[in-house]
Length: 330
Image (cartoon, rainbow, N blue to C red; front, side):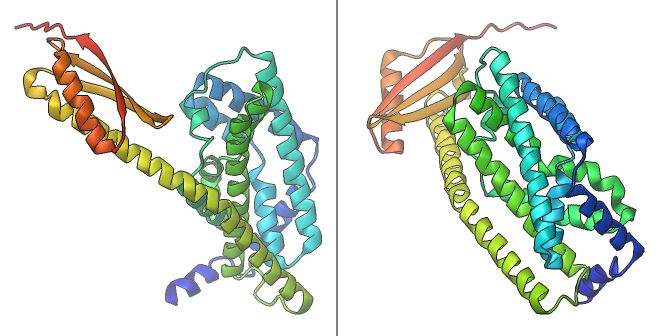
């Protein structure tokens, strides 16, 4: 309880909190500069995704002004103000459409490239992404509420990661890749809802509008419940992706462990990357192996049988062998 009282005492009924409201209210009625910066950010993020460059993508997130209207949706729920919510949601929707269009144009005018790690990571969002977005909403609301922490805003913008998933969805539109569009829009929607919910809860906890009563109080309650329900809905497919990713990573480690057990380092072997896919009732395993001598065919068959026992199904094994050269110097 002491921690909660300290938390609420930081910004309750202060000039800073009123200034934060004014700033977020203005963000819900964007001007031309808002859309220009959204467009520039989307173009930068798109080409950063093509280059698989984390630095370029971070730069795009830093200049994107989308975080403010998203937090404004949370503040509108905290105030129990449906008109404010409509204005903020409209600003978010317009910004998202501009970002999607710019990313799609960039994809159409660019040669199609194989999706890199940065694109693939945004096609199968998981619960960790949802947790980061909720934390970003809490941090963003607290940062806007107290100018002592204004230096943290760039970090909040990076953590929120709103523009990159929109850019991935735009790339998917340009390349006619429906899986890319669906996964990226799920991530954007989840980020949007989690940030708004985290912001609303934080604004209320900070004591921004502790005396909202009557119709406004009822509307605020309905808004919080609706946001929580939406959060639960988007969390369902993300939970599936989380379990799927954990299972795949566990099996990949298991596959690598079986191969390493039969091609040990003490015999001069080193197992590099391992990959597996399940298709048509069979596991297809590919592994990169380094060594001083090619493994015998019988040994490879024995490894395949061991993998079948571990994976629990018929398995095809592809060993890619590269010979070592021992270059020593004294």
